[in-house]
Amino acid sequence: MAARDIILKELMEACHLQGVEALLSWDQETYMPAGAGAARSEQVAYISGLRHAELVGEPLKNALEELIDLETGELRIMTLNDRETRQVKEIWRDYRQQAALPAGFVTTLAKHASISQQAWVRARKDNDFSFFEPFLTKMVQMQQEKAKYLARGATDYDSLMDQFEPEMTSEKISGLFNEIRVRLVPLIKSLQEVKHRVNGSILTREYNIDDQWAFGMDMLKAIGFNVNNGRQDKSAHPFTTSTHPTDVRITTRLRENDLKTALLGTLHEGGHALYEQGLLLEEYGNPLGQAISLGIHESQSRMWENLVGLSASFWRFAYPKLQSKFKDQLRNTERDQFQAAINRVRPSMIRVEADEATYNLHVMLRFEIEKMLINENFPVAELPQLWNDKMEEYLGIRPQNDAEGVLQDVHWSFGAFGYFPTYALGNLYSVQFFNQVKQDIPGLEEQFARGDFSNLLKWLRDNIHSKGRGRKAEELVLELTGKPLSAQPFMDYLETKYRKIYNLS
Image: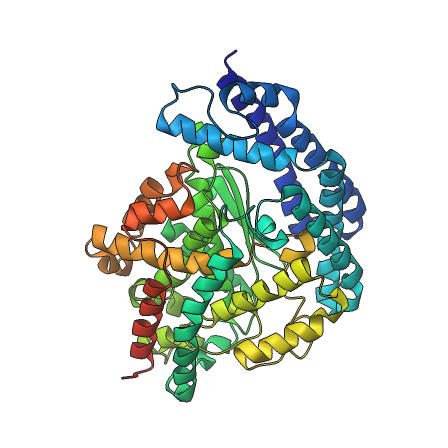
């Protein structure tokens, strides 16, 4: 059997195990009985160990070594075409990352991540950071240890961030954040000075949860989510997971007096799901059948949530359907009123419920805290105070309890340090991509107004989803838009949109 065939066989088997692990984790957050937590952590650790062994085993290692120098990444076989070369380079990158981690560490980390996530659910429910503190302390220590093994960046935090956004650095992120901050802070200030111009109380009336669910499912189907190959459920924190492009799971959360959270959360996770459902089936198991990066993944969710779901053209299509679902609540509310309300800019405690203008401030806060935890050994016990102080500094508001403060995100519980910057990158990528889409597809807004999102989805399928990891994230942006990643298009979009909504000169 040729070396590439051996490699692809081993990767396929590892991918099957990853699918099993994903399903176990999905069940843990949705339907698992409360008493099954300890057993589940053992199961997840076992599957994680098997997968790691597959990815660093002798069959894959020996076959890969025939194609590429495992130390330098120099190709040994010069007859590969560009796509095959990219595939082998990405497999080598993954191999080096996995081989750097001791097997015992991998299973121990997977077990603790499962236990820690369950502890977070309880701590958040009980509004008690002290219960979660020892679990998080151990997780931070394990992530610091992991960073040392990986050693892929200028700092330990950079090494962790590289797992989610390859070749991105803290220095680049800080530069982009500075570009955003210098224009965003004055914009938010000017909007808050005339906040009386937009009334958001429409969204906090009493909306039946079952009807919210039904409307959300209708919108998912409208944008192209294949319910035959996916499903939606409820969880404490909305997320998307996939075992295969034909089995993509998303979750949402619903509140009777908050219409915006479930709707936009569903569209956000739907964007992730469309990406997963659009990956090439024939490349399943290898990098050409996987998402490029978490930043590109977030560009898809943020595009469907904000650039589509908050647009006037979307609500020309969706508002009559929403109004018929909630006749009493929306009888006397015009579409323009509703559309302004759902776009209201108002500093809020919860990141996933933040408007698109203040959202990046939530990400900046987490980015700063994560660097302090990983690079500077900031004491976990002091996190609530640090979090609250930074919320006041960045957003001018202060959490009243741990649940709306330091306990609001699930990410740290399972060790996703370095993930948060990808949300902000996703915002930037999404606007650059969407600007290009509008050039390539004339009349896009009229299509949305008719409830036709098929051309947008096809563009994303053709240009992003089907490419797998055939390009690096920044290469893809440059190739598709002709320009490198920049904060300018995003800030131009925000300023133009919100000055119009708030009637600012």
